[in-house]
Length: 178
Image 1: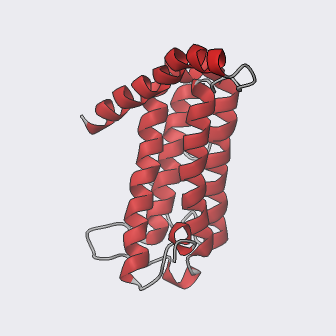
Image 2: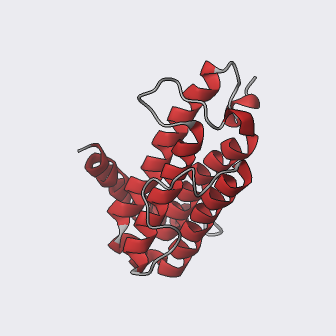
């Protein structure tokens, strides 16, 4: 239900600029056109994905096995899950096999911090390339997926903030605010 609600909210937000855009051009003839849906999704995907990548690069490799308790994923498993899920979306959108096929790639396959960082970075970059290739029509066709999976990355970003805070570390995104 939450993902559906988020999708509806994003769809409404995407429509607002289209309705207001003619009004802004009437007031400012040099105003830039409102970005289309693919530009909006690309910006959100890149923003959240790059926050995860920043965490992956920042977190010490010695703590990649950290987890707040035995009922949740380790730091490494969180990153691999986010990347694996990204590829689940990309495979569905493109109809091609991209990245791994697992939703939760194994830390036996991705053993080191550099391997995990590279896999996550590639999933974000492959998503960006797919959004650009799809353009507005393709993004609108798969809007629910793009919104849901961008939100999914954001949920894991939030979980990893807790991992940082539990270890007395300020997350990269928050450091400029301190």
